[in-house]
Amino acid sequence: MSTFRGHHKRTLSGLAVGVTALLLAACSGGSDTPSSSQPAGGSSSAASTLPKTLLFSPIGLQVPAMKGLSEGVTGYGKSQGWEVVVQDPSLDPTKQAQQVTEVLESGRAGAAWIIAIAPKSMADVLKSAQGKGIPVLINGVPADYGFDGPQAGISFDTIDYAAGGTALGDQLGKCITQKMGGKAQVIYGESAPGTAGKKESDDAFLAALKKAAPGATVVQNWTLSDRAASQTDVGNILQGKPDVNAVAAANDEGALGAIGAFKAAGRDLPCIAEFGGNDEVLALVKDGTIFASVALQFGDDMTQSFDTLVKMQADPTAEGPILTVPQKVITKDS
Image 1: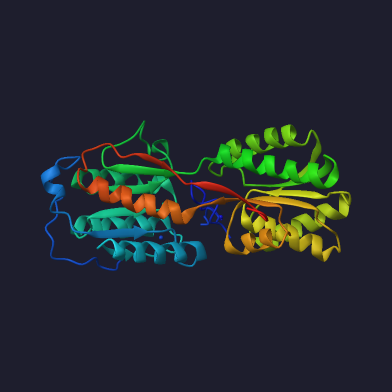
Image 2: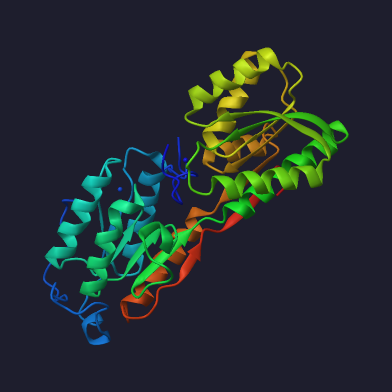
């Protein structure tokens, strides 16, 4: 929102990014495609024969955000004259690699969009796609897959966690300044150790909070998992630290769990800000329960990702761009 955070994993947990949060189904056949013996990188002449069939492999359709994204990709692709074939590896990285490889080897895919469950498991798959001249868009950065920089025929799509952490700290600080005169006892829901983007996000959050509300103090952190666990963890914190009055959470489920914990304790929560921006969270922003959400704009990202793959299909030998998921701060008045 979940382990789906390398790099979309975190926000689709519960983003979740999830993350949260992803084929044995066949693409339409009949179009000529490059053979597996084609030299690495493909060629522009080969690209002209690639079918308008996109293989979309999310982390798993049991993740609501992934189900919604797959439907969005399918609809947008159809509007552009493409067929989209959606896979469901059910959060199993080995299954995901096998499924994608099978379709790449069959020559049925004209492009592939992969949201990798475990980036290391997809390194060989990406090299295979390069060898066949099939453009790929995948989450993360080149280093996640063993590359030392941008690659021919591969576009990487990442989340700017430092920017997200900065916005999160700034918004919580604004709330504390406006509602509590700049002083508060804060608890912070942080991602699990080893999660992609954790250090960048955490460091940026703390720096921005200190700047926006110097009188606020982070008195305890808890490690995010699902909503129920966050509600339990925050409830336990409140028993030992009854003066806590502000919360920041690095994903949607952490924020929702914290709200549940305060309600269960019969406590007001004047200030809460979070990173993610699912529909449930945004509704709570609009009714004033949540002060602000640093919302990832996955609809905009879907469009830019698909359009990038279309352009890359024209020349799979060209170096693919590194994309960034757009972010937007949402408040009650915005």
